[in-house]
Structure formats: structure tokens, C-alpha cells
Amino acid sequence: MDAGQTRVLNRVAGLFRRRNFNIESLAVGHSETPGISRMTFVANGTVRDMRQVTTQLDKLINVTGIEDVTDKPSLIRELVLIKVKANSQNRHEVIQIAELHGGKIADIAIESLVVQIVGRPDKVNSLIKLMQYFGIIEMVRTGAVAMVRAEEKVPNQLKGGCKVS
Image (cartoon, rainbow, N blue to C red):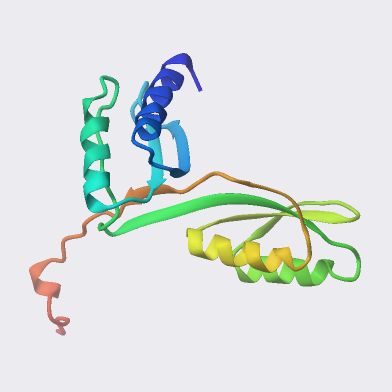
């Protein structure tokens, strides 16, 4: 993160802190536009509270746009790495559970393995709960990132059925 990103992040975090809002998740990274970073926040509050936060964020000089995706069809994903206790007796079971949840094995050691999962937060939480049974040694989560789904226009000739020749 460069100095400009850090300044903007400090301003945004300060705004949440002054209003006593809790940021549940925060992800910051480069966007498709050079020099512009994207920050994805997950925060809970009333509709009025969130409207106030949006209004205040919009007043910050370095903020170029705000989009609330709460009620929009969106793709929401999170990356998690989970180091789990795994020995020769349970390793296969840990791997099988991870793979059934869409996880992949990122690293294997004698007494542990690292599961990587990218998915919806509910799916990630489900896998974490199951991995707790085996013993989580260490875990790191990116926080949720989101993107509104593309709107697709359906050609008139395809609406309401199919055309048969």
C-alpha cells in the first residue's frame, strides 16, 4: 500500500471511528484504473446510519465513487487460508472435507496442512466450523470483496420461450 492509499484509508477509518461504526471487514487493493484503489467495507447499521456514512464518505476529497451493493445482485467473495492439524490418521478426511467445500490444499507438512478457500462468506464460515473439529492452528482472512453482477439484456426473440425452425 502506498502513502496515498494509507492516507485515504486513515481518513475513511477515522470517519467510521468518529461515528462509532464497527468495520467488520475491510479489503483494499488496486482497481482497473491506474492510481485508484478499491476499498470494500462490510459494516452493519440502520439504513439511516449507512446513508450517513455514505454521505460522509462522499465528502472525502480522495473518494471517487461509492456503491452500496447491499440490495444489488452481487458477487461477494473472500479468501481464507486455514492451517489445520492433520496427521496420517485424519489427513484424508481433512482433505476430503476441504475439497467438498471448494477448498484446495495449499501446503502440506507432517502434522498440518493449509487449506485455501475462495468463496461466499457463508460457505467459508461453514468450512471454518468443520475445520475447528480437527484443530485450527492459524487462520488468515482477506475480508469480503464485492462486485455488482453485469446486467444482461435478453433479446426480444428469446423472451418467453424458444424459437423452433
